[in-house]
Amino acid sequence: MNVVTGLNEAVIEGFLKKRVSFEVVGLRGNFMEGIKLVETKVEALGMKCRVKSDTKSALAQGGTIGALASLASLPVSLTVLSITAAASAGHSLLTRNPDYEVLKDYVNKKLKVVYKK
Image 1 (cartoon, rainbow, N blue to C red):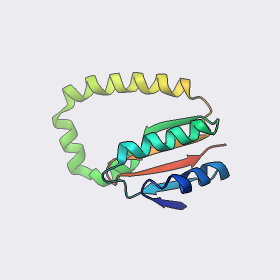
Image 2 (cartoon, helix red, strand yellow):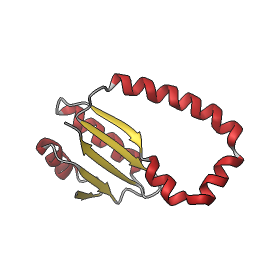
Image 3 (cartoon, helix red, strand yellow):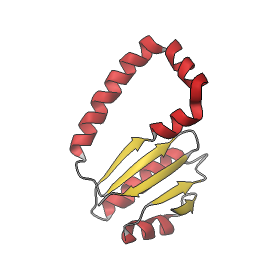
């Protein structure tokens, strides 16, 4: 897979124009800016994108300790989870058949930008 280090706008835009999948790494201080940049570039090219969390990566790195910690905060988490699920379902309906899917990896501070069509 192609890799972009940091917020290199020219390289990101080049990959998007070529319609290829890639990863954006090295976003420690600029994670939210990276998400916004990729989303803006995709939409500027007349394409649609869906942004979602890469839960598989987070679960794999969190392991058993992460699972136990999440059980400790279960009552609060259920409320937040139901609100998040409703918002996510609405967002998925709005971005049906996206050109790109942007997976946010909060643990490693990287984005996986996957071309879907």
